[in-house]
Image 1: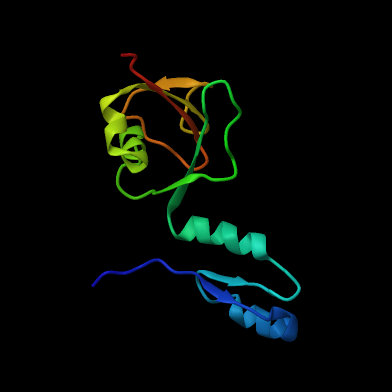
Image 2: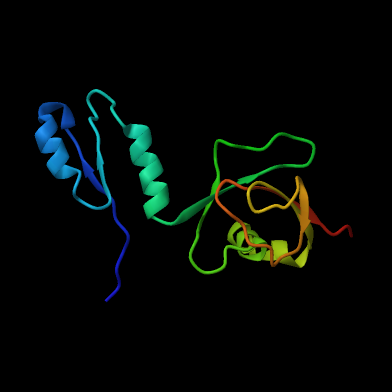
Length: 133
């Protein structure tokens, strides 16, 4: 069997009582929301990121600020290394790879110059430096 992580999203919590909400609170991996009133939508997104075991890696072009609008999403299971990230962007990127600059919780200092085996963490910022010539 293959088990897929899931999150139970309970909508229309604006129509139930506090006692019923306390009963629902016993369900694991559950998030109460109200789409009509836009209650707890941010909590739903945060819970999904936690339980689905995904990483958001932001890219930073040289001389520019990081792009926080569109992260590269990679699975946290296995080895979320710089090499895995580069191969996720384009297979030919590792042939030109020189080093990476990483900002975030996986870096010991900011920025940290890393090789291809560096393990990335959620919401890290990475800048890939390629070989010249």
